[in-house]
Length: 507
Image (cartoon, rainbow, N blue to C red; front, side, top):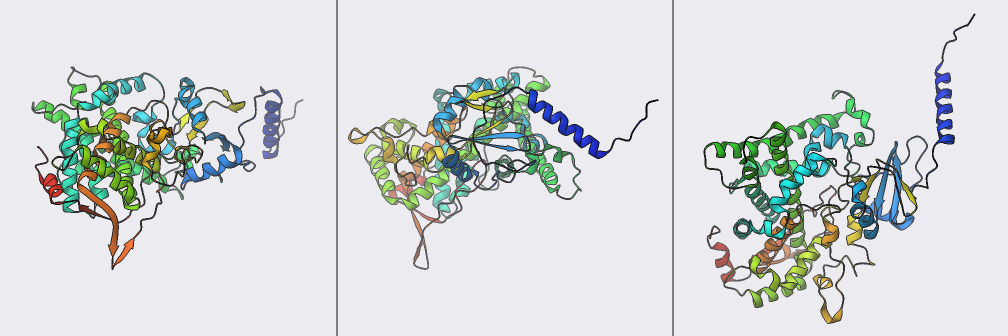
């Protein structure tokens, strides 16, 4: 007669070990993973994953381990790329398998960013979003339709800076939001305390924090999202619920504004009204319209804010660059009018300055992670399906082998002077890899803000109690990195400049 014996915990553990050993014996042998920090038994490299200025840690890994560094965090493989050529080979040239996006349990699922284009997996919905974008901002010609909106709002920006020059970052944010909301929803913002601008600022701050590498432990230990909010250590769930509600409001409130305007027959032309005006939409189609418009804001506004703010920092620290750009503006444009997009090709130094602003401060220092959709072997290294691929954009823009003296703000590196070959075009790096939908709109906004500001303002170090204050170059952490808050002095260049700024911004 068969006797049933009690199965103990030790029996189960031994059985699991046995199964694991059998799998190790019989599983298919793959090439080695790329090198990286060795990690610890059971938990892997969970303690090595940085959450503050991760680009600096990735750079140190690159020096030690090479172009691709690998860590494994509780079964999740993560590859940090420290080479432009490697990033382009993998993320651009092999985009068919490297274009997927990771599922971020907190940012994507709990907060709700899974619905926005940057988080969508490859498929029909992503293709619909891209199609929506391409018609509106997919080419320079398409973006050119909004030149008048850009010029009008940038004139208003100059007026705000002239009136309260001690608040440049607030004015930059207001202007970027005003441009995008006019394009996305036909909404004209209020001069002060606009509800949509304030809402969008909060949402973009949340997004930058929530999507940064290592932001939440639950992103690498997904089962933590199942624990109740009251459980010790579950404060992230309460935070995610608050951020979810704010995101939903940003997506829905401007969309309702457009629907109400269309019902009243007074809706101005916009990205949203154009997409809604083609007849009755299904629930899925309207969902795509709402989230495409939200992606338009998130994709172009905060990057513009960061770059233009870093431009003011650079002009404070590098006055000789400012003087050269102003000399070119004075010679080409003169002092009787403001520069416009029509002057762009005639202002090569200003154009090079814009490129250097994009390079000198990496707006998205670690890009946004890609996810490989099938096993791959790259440069002899095994990249398993599901691996997160993080390009270290900050290092690529500060690589001393590519950019001479990278800490210096030097626009001339992008000019072919004295037979010198210009250094690598930063736009191929700074906007990330794969499809870069918002690149044309962001570049146009940055160029105009910089050209107009240089034409009418002198930017210099602030003086307090007779002492000059030298700002610190200290980029903040986040998916979108902003310069550390700093003080500077902004004064009109002349009485003529004041008159130009005070002209009716609606011209």
